[in-house]
Length: 276
Image (cartoon, rainbow, N blue to C red; front, side, top):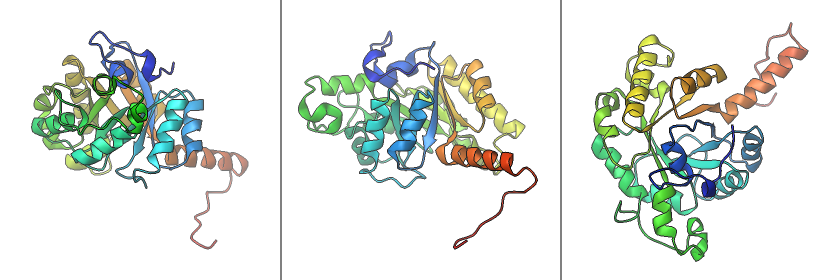
């Protein structure tokens, strides 16, 4: 993967940054979720050559303050930084973008109306209703005279389709102007379809591929999270624009477990409780 910073990516629509990358049918983006609030983790992901991180403020231990150094570390290392907000709240979306995130990922978006609300919260007028402030970090504290227009061109809006209700309304989600990517969440979708914890169930897999295909055919970036590198490769080959492989905690645990197993192949991993 070739990392591309916000300043050197553009599209035929005039988009830049991550929004431009998602609009480019020839780009394929590889990322991972970050749940550990440490700059070192972000730098390790960048050193491995990933294109972006999604900082998980829905499930991870993140308020606004710890997000700032992680976003700065990602961008300083040549990656995009997206924040998954906990829910569709315009103030929370605006606050994350004010501190410099390249895009937002909003969970459990169920309808076209909800998608339109996400877009409105993430874009300045006339494209949206985001509150204006030119002294924030994203505006270089007032040093960027073109900030409001530039932010609309580069800020990526990703909405999560992870409920069967959203699948049934997928045409409405896709039809909303300004939504740059439809991000499928297979794990929650599996639960919504009655296959709790079975994201690889054939019916779930078929549904995921159908949503990704519909998004791609409509000119949207089809995106999702997977567990393995092979799944990522297969879906990128099938036309997905952005794939997130696993999460930092799982990949670190996997590496530690693999190393220990290589040292003690005859000894199963001990289950250690508090105070061991």
